[in-house]
Amino acid sequence: MEKDKQPTAPHILKKLAHVLGTAVKNRRIEIPEEFGKGYCSGFVFNAHIRMLIMNYELNQDLLVENPDRNTAAQMILFKFQNIFPKTETLSAGKQLKTIPSVLIATGSVNTDAVIPVHTNTAVINIEVDAAYLKGLFDLPETSLVLQNLLQNTQPLLFEQMIYPSLQKIIEEIVSESVEETFKLFFLRIKAEELICRLLMELEKRDEKHIYALNIHDIEAIYQLKEQMLEQLETPPVIKELAVRSGMSPSKLKRVFKQIFGNSIFNYYQEFRMKKAAYLLKEEKLSVSAAGYQLGFTNLSHFSRVFREHIGMKPKQYSQS
Image 1: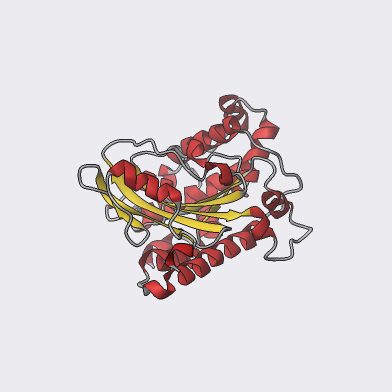
Image 2 (image 1 turned 90 degrees about the vertical axis):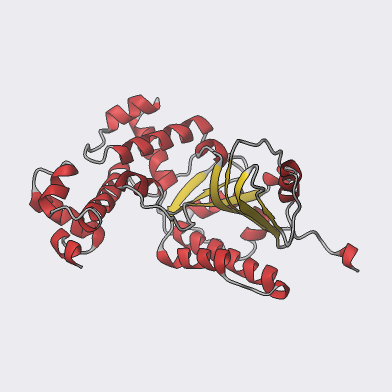
């Protein structure tokens, strides 16, 4: 009877194990010391949903062909990044770049081209068949984002910040000790809960039009985002960003908002206040020093913006 069971470990895991000269045990491989450290585990829950957990550092890049490449086009990818606990203390700049988020991509988008894969990998990938997902709930006619995502017929990418309740589910997936009898059942429920909550967030986006994306535009948007996070003391100028991206100002604003669910300036301001909060709490800067460092010349304005994003005034926050 054992041989009639469907495989519960993804083919890519077995392929990686072969390249590393190791074996898959309980749907998991430990990275051999000569190659680096960490682990990779994978789960095929059924024909419609699978998950890969990768948390490792390699001494060198490895080229591993994905055996499931032909079925990837049917799938929607949910790529969770920066979700593993950090052991080292991060500077303000690095901390902003490692805020937990999830990329949600249709089958025709290669997210590894968006966020380059290095030898240090710490992500959870959940792939769900678009038709299967579409059949799980009544699709609201008002949400163009969900309609276009679940149709899975054009290249689309959305990014969503991970809030505490989502992080809690992720921690349960990574850390919860579950008997082997219930492990696949438990992890599938948690994976589907994550996807459900993310779709509920995407449904709130009020896009009036959804535009197919190309990899050049996606890469340009992510480069601009990185530059903004590195220069939070300088407010973005749309015309300058448009020239750098090779897009018109209107296209730049449209593509940015479609991916991140926020305007360029609001997105910038949100991260500017996250850095302000870090400077006040972790670096113990005064309100005036933090405000001036982030380019504010009017401290009343700084205090008002900070309260809008953080929920309390800077002085109050630094003393909390």
